[in-house]
Length: 341
Ligand code: UFG
Image 1 (cartoon, protein in one colour):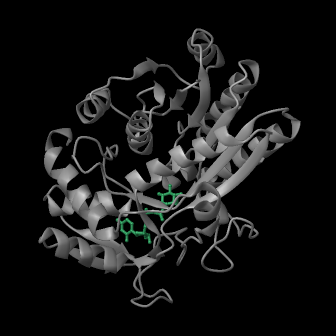
Image 2 (image 1 turned 90 degrees about the vertical axis):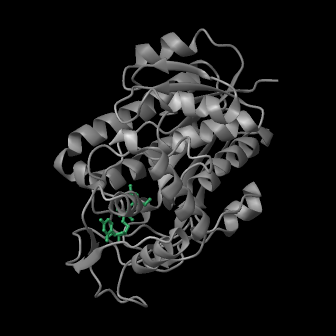
């Protein structure tokens, strides 16, 4: 049986947790990573959790020849999970062309490789950012997109379109786009987790840095939204639940006889406000977070959360871990990884 899965960006935050999930589910991951936003140490964390050191190729997906040099020598590849991408909303506004170049070129190279070497299953890491400012809540996969306000989000939307066109022309590929909501937390062992470059932009990594005293105070961007406590609402999902969704997607793609394209929301379906996340973090970890309300952050949407029925019905996948678990795991990871700062 073919059980090898190429994981681009496999040393990144979601990628590394997915590599662990693949190993635990009988797949053989082959990691491709250019180390631009990740660290070689992640492979040691994966080894400590699973007892296996997967094969690792330090190459850049933007360079087709590098990708081909690796892939052409491997027999038995059943799928590619494509994470490798830039992911900062703010940075994408400043360096739009770099985001389009990296995110789109890498995807095109992945498709070219999948086509040339008959790798039938492709799972793409998309984002709920493609919904823009949603017209309704919870968001469903087939609802029309609102306006997407940043190049990062547009690059994800364009990648989905490119994949859809590829599927139309393909004779046999099974392609799945997973629209992630807000991933948080870390592996419960504290051996792998998120390693943001510099000062974090995202909420939970910022909270853990304030909790550990590395940053002075959290700014809560806006408390005048039309929500229950005035702060934004998000669908925060444990990164291990997100990782498991890739196994379900791959199994589903593998089970299909004919070519297929599909897209799934991967969230919990539960909206949580920014303030609730902070106060729950304080409660479950028994630690105070110093925070203040400041003005709204440009480009933020008020509220977004997923309708997850499609993933439940089609992929037999549902999130299992609650917010408290995510927040305990995030704090455990922070405590075990002081050396990274
Ligand atoms: N927030 C703060 N203070 C901070 C950081 C964030 O109040 O220091 C607030 C934001 O204003 C927002 C919420 O916390 O209301 C969540 O913000 P994040 O930056 O953590 O996450 P976003 O929802 O803005 O975006 C994230 C990723 C995107 C991805 C999107 C949907 O950054 O890459 O989720 O998947 F596209």
